[in-house]
Length: 105
Image 1 (cartoon, one colour):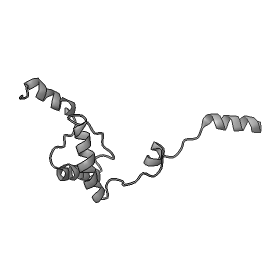
Image 2 (cartoon, rainbow, N blue to C red; image 1 turned 180 degrees about the vertical axis):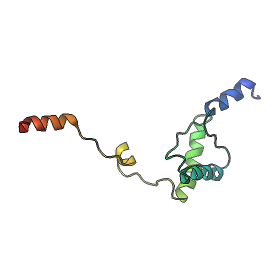
Image 3 (tube, one colour; image 1 turned 180 degrees about the horizontal axis):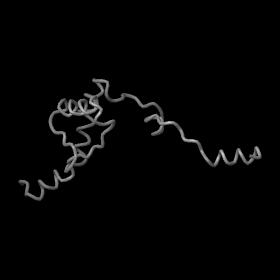
């Protein structure tokens, strides 16, 4: 069964206006590394052409290549998103207000 024009459109429509990386795991890793090292971005949002196989391919083939290059972690820093990404923990304004109320401020 061959692709119809509508099928082809549906395969590529999600990439309209975004960088489309195709090729071998090395080719995709090269492109990601080039953009990262040039300061063009600080992260990627993956929009695979098909589910779930494209995600599996990226995880099984591209991630190990990025890890070999030292561009992707092999272990996580903690158990929360904040611990993984490293932003400071914001002050809890309610706890501050309660503390100030106790101190009579």
